[in-house]
Image (cartoon, rainbow, N blue to C red; front, side, top):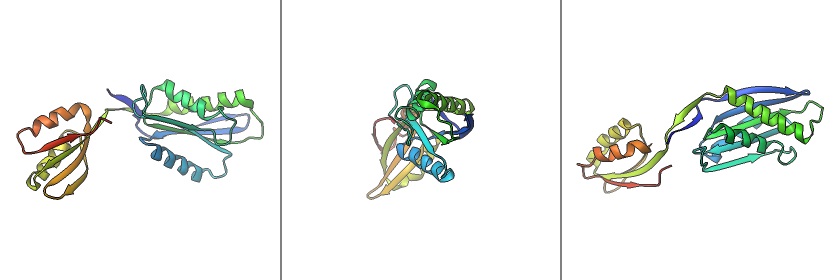
Length: 201
């Protein structure tokens, strides 16, 4: 099953009662990638009062992981509204951060929920998306003489070689679209190559 993911980073600005809400949405396929992006924005906007965020990883219809943070705003008024937007938009592998510059006028809990939700909604309208296919990981074990052929074949099926260990032969770790994996197995069926698969990712 294919699902939508961010194709590029998006940014928008929402101003409410002199407070500025700068929203960013970007691709993130792990918690560490999401937290790295949050760190980048903290560095970019060090004088902002809050950096609130939420992420959703994997297939949005059944996410692998999700998280959120209020960064000092009253509990439930920032991270949760941002995550709610992500869940309703049905986009996977996404990190959304809303940077707030306080304008001196308190918005109240309801006002904050509407502001963070509105900022998240606005940046999502700016976000370009693409379709991502579920991936699977496999280990290919073969003689040294088959390495170049296997590397070429993996590329033909839109896969990548993540690692290659050399011992008595080669053990190649590959990642490729799940729906193309059976075709790869068929293509190497006549070779002395053993295939070990992990669970699809």
